[in-house]
Length: 85
Figure 1 (tube, rainbow, N blue to C red):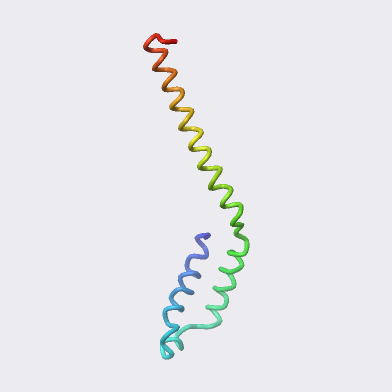
Figure 2 (cartoon, rainbow, N blue to C red):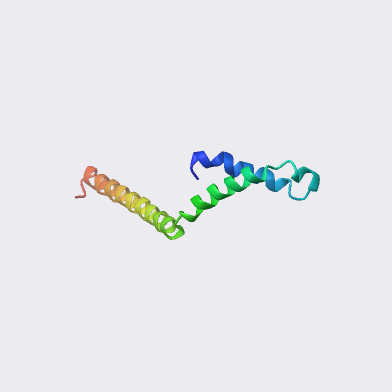
């Protein structure tokens, strides 16, 4: 979530805590809460879960590929340094 929406999301979370107390619920500014909810929900609608999943698996594949490359290079260097190649 962008840094600019953190305060608005925190405002929503704080207002949610007042939900079970009718007297405390009167302290919540409904106009500000509606504006914060609108901003957060509109940003959340732009998040593409499939793209995040794909990026996650690509990152894991890249990490594994790099690690395998380093291990193979290390084995080749070890074989070269001991005169086996």
